[in-house]
Each structure stands twice: as C-alpha cells, then as structure tokens.
Length: 173
Image 1 (tube, rainbow, N blue to C red):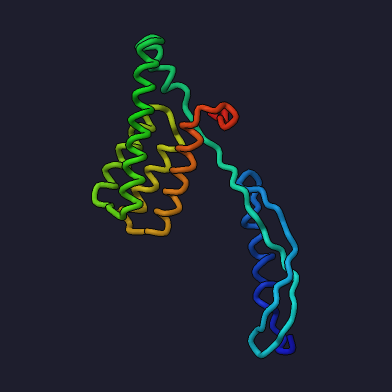
Image 2: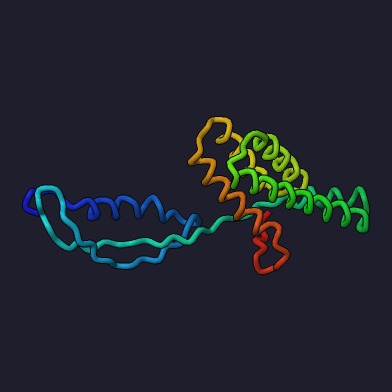
C-alpha cells in the first residue's frame, strides 16, 4: 500500500456496519475473511475484513378489528365462510400477480396490485396493504429495482400471513 491509499475493502466494511445493524431491522452474523487483491498503484496484499450475513426480521402488522367486525356483523359460521373465501381469493390474486410478473406481463399489474391492497385492507392485513401500495407506486414511477425489492417483500409477507402454522404467526397488532 505504498501509494498511501487504503484498500477499498477496508473503507467499505466499517461504513456499512452502522447502517445495516440498526436494532430491530436485522441480525447479523460476522465472519472474518481475508481478501486478496491488487489495488491501484500495483499494491498487493491481504486485508482482513468483516463479512456480514444479514437475517431479515420483518414484523407482520395485522389489525384484528377488521376481522372482529366481520364476526360481529355476520356471526361465527358466516364469518368463517366469508373470511376463508376472502383469503382464498387473496391467494389467487397473488398467484396471478406472480405469474404476470414472472412473465413480464405488466399491463394489468397496477390494477391487480390495487385489488390486492383493497383485499388486504378489508382483512386487516396492514403490512400486505402497505407493501401493495408501495409496489403500485414503484410501478407507476417505472422504478424496476424498487419494484423487484417490494415484490419480494410482498411474497415474504404473504407467505407468513397466509401460513396457518402458529409458529410463524408474529402476534403483532
């Protein structure tokens, strides 16, 4: 490092750590790794850096009042049927959206995302509602990178929200 400049790895790793490790956002496992390389000016060497493995921790927000009002107005048996049907329709909308997005057929995606948002709102699925609204916004702006990230978020939220296994239930309201 005879040219007086630090290797890029040495500067990049400490700068990333504070931003990535905010409490409640992600857990990180750190690993020391040797990075071999040639830097500008012909400097060669081995730099020890920290590699972070992030584990996403995303809370699923649900509003129990929406479901409770359906039960109050319809009664238990009818509400069970309505909610089961609504969840099935929501799953079908998600499957249709996934197919459209996978095939890059985005003509009606905006309308389908709006339908998903309204369905999630009616079922009190706040996280899914917000993610669908965010995806529509990115699609309307033409921001493909942000849309892809939010679509992945929608899939994570839907997987956790629609999974009947209680160990995946977040319990947050």
